Amino acid sequence: MRTVDLIQRKRDGEELAPEEIEYLVDGYTKGEIPDYQLSAFLMAVYFTGMSDREVSRLTECMLRSGESLDLSGIPGVKVDKHSTGGVGDKTSLIVAPLAAAAGVVVPMMSGRALGHTGGTLDKLESIPGLRTDLTPEQFTTQLKEIGLCFIGQSERLAPADRKLYALRDVTATIESVPLIASSIMSKKIAEGVDALVLDVKVGNGAFMKKQVDARRLAQMMVGIGRRVDKRVQALITDMSQPLGFAIGNALEVMEASQTLQGAGPEDLTRLSVELAARMIFLGKQSATLEEARRTAEKKLVDGSGYRKLKEAVAAQGGNPAALDKFELLPNATGMREIPSPRAGYVSQIAAEDIGTASNMIGAGRQRKEDQIDPAVGVILEVKVGEKVDAGSVLCRLYYTKEDRVDEAADMVEDAFRISSQKPDERELILEVVG
Image (cartoon, rainbow, N blue to C red; front, side):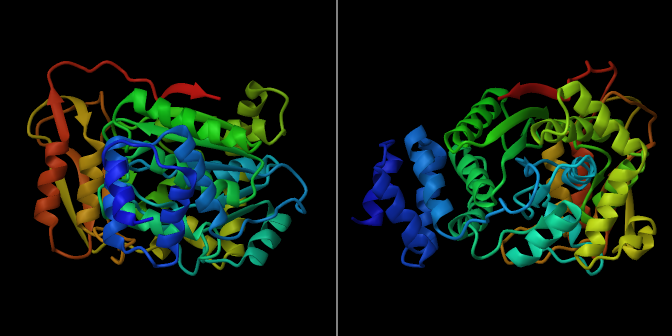
């Protein structure tokens, strides 16, 4: 078979046979199919979609492209959490230690910045000394000892997804529902977890702009999980404005640390407790979801979640003191305030524009080989619904290079809408699937 014929058939909306999907995945993984042809295939999928059969086969092929971890020798139920990506979404740094402090074994396999959204690994690696490129043996040892480990996707684990993930990031195909579903689930199944909690974002700052698409993605991933006997629950959550106040790697580590110490933003705290509760429930550490919520709240209030994060940071070579003394984290050298042009109510903060502007000054990647500046980002001073005066500060940009700061500042300023009427409140958690 020829790659160009498969691209053409998918472009025309045809369903590919399982062996044709396998040919594409294997060929690209081995370097026999070049980037430009797989880019064309990804774009065809973006526009014409995939059937459930194609998605299942794609997931299976990516899973089989490498090794799978066997965590059966570790006592306890293994539960991971995954977000489809948002602006200011640092919940993994909060949720994982809360669940682990409650007795859940949490193998947290995370990704890097993708498009306008940040990556958990990039945030963690802003902590001096911290390593996420652990061997499978180091990973399992740490899970046995403290019940929590943050790891990146190794070369041996679903390598096909690793290559496709990087290619999607630079070909404007990250929003494709079947590509997102197969990417996430191939990694999580290869990771060897028993259960999975999904945070499917929807809104301006998410890859899914419409709730119907977010629901379809959630249902697709829950279905993939069920077919391989994994317990999966998905929350569909609002991403029409950034989550919390901090956007940027070291800035988000600071906010996650504050949240675990009981001083975090209300929206970030509420969502983190709910996600942790779902992990605790699926991890069989509570008989009911309500009991799991009480447990998650207790682990937040008594500081045991915070102590668990410090323990994991230290185990992975990081300096846990940086979670107390923020001057030990990378810090920006420049700051610019964005004032409100008029008095009124904040009716919109376009999250995608905030994320894109943050990337412009170095917080994310424009190309897959780009280096991230961990110090830079944006700190919001207000959220949607708050009243502001003319000239009051809406947010602050933190940067280390002057390049593109003016452009980023203009984009951030345009992301805010100030209205005379207070907007209706929007729910943070919109639906539960599974």
